[in-house]
Length: 71
Image (cartoon, rainbow, N blue to C red):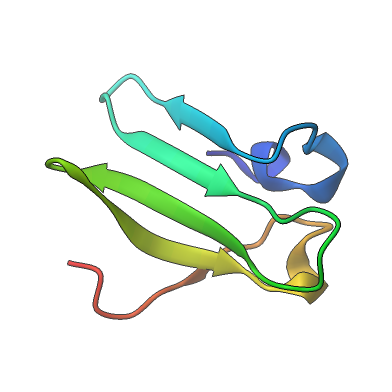
């Protein structure tokens, strides 16, 4: 997902699912009006893996902090 896709100003839904031309499937749970990190997941096999968080202070820009150990 692009920075614009992850920005707080573009969040209209409680969840967003998107895939790119390589068929990478990603899910964003923005928690737009909550004081908790947004979550970015990637589909791997038959499960969703947490790959990053969007800290409350970063929701305006959509900056994702990678999550360790998501291989």
